[in-house]
Length: 116
Length: 112
Image 1 (spheres, rainbow over the protein chains, first blue to last red):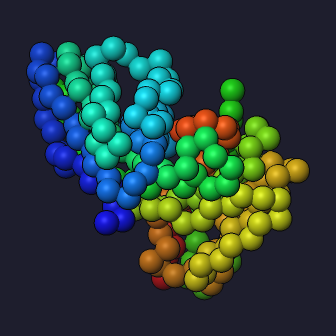
Image 2: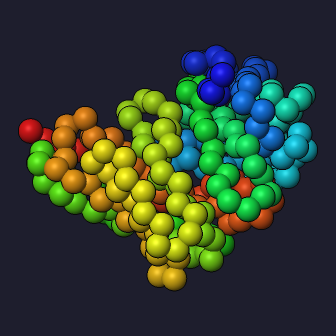
């Protein structure tokens, strides 16, 4: 299995809802990432989990809460979002965090989130 | 703060022509990545460049890295319509598990 999967593909939620985005990889990668991408913009890093520990949190608002239950799974819990949080949320994984050489990140298909 | 600058941001070209996309970055990192994104889709990894002078080619695309100049190029040879997409270069700052910092992307349209 050489892919990163994300569910759901699309999500529409109100500002008072609680929802979760899920990401899974079975490539034995030891780092997983969440990125946010607004239309016609580059992806922006939100969180990094390395060896199942949160290593980078790019000053993301607390209404986004990441969770890494195990090395294959990554969740992003959403609560009290704002309309400006509407975006494509991309998950990625890489095999060799913290080591020399390539640390190529492989991206999932993304979840397109709309906040009403 | 790591900065990655791409140019041009928009490029319209005819099939059969050659062109180059440039990527400058501000860190000493020698790990540079090129990705392709089709509209509404995710990112597809194209090239990983790890050292000064690295050159990689896949079909009509060739990428190179000059770490001394902190410059990478993506060269398109004899463009075809199927190469129309947005191309991003990205850099990680090295050490630890690092996320990528992306350039703004080059929106490439190839017309018959």
